[in-house]
Image 1 (cartoon, rainbow, N blue to C red):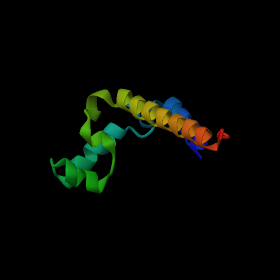
Image 2 (cartoon, rainbow, N blue to C red; image 1 turned 135 degrees about the vertical axis):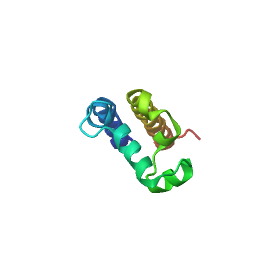
Image 3 (cartoon, rainbow, N blue to C red; image 1 turned 180 degrees about the vertical axis):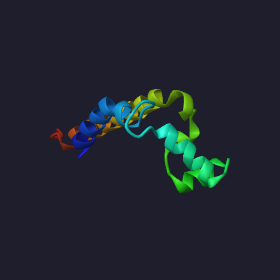
Image 4 (cartoon, rainbow, N blue to C red; image 1 turned 90 degrees about the horizontal axis):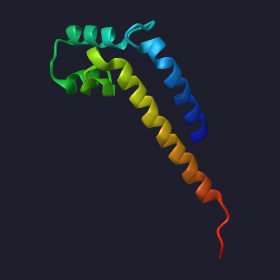
Length: 95
């Protein structure tokens, strides 16, 4: 399962900027700005309950492409750790 997630985050690392980046098909910064205007709240927790994303806590209007890469890299590394842990647990143990 960890390998499947690893491949998914590897693909997202290559495609996030083209899909959700500043000049992507559906720019996430425009979406989050419109959602902020619609809700009319400056409180991050009310925005988080409307659209749960970690991008509320960063400067998404300025550094969106960077943070998309950071999230993909972090998740990819966690999947690697999960796969290595699973391989370690499945390896034969000497008695």
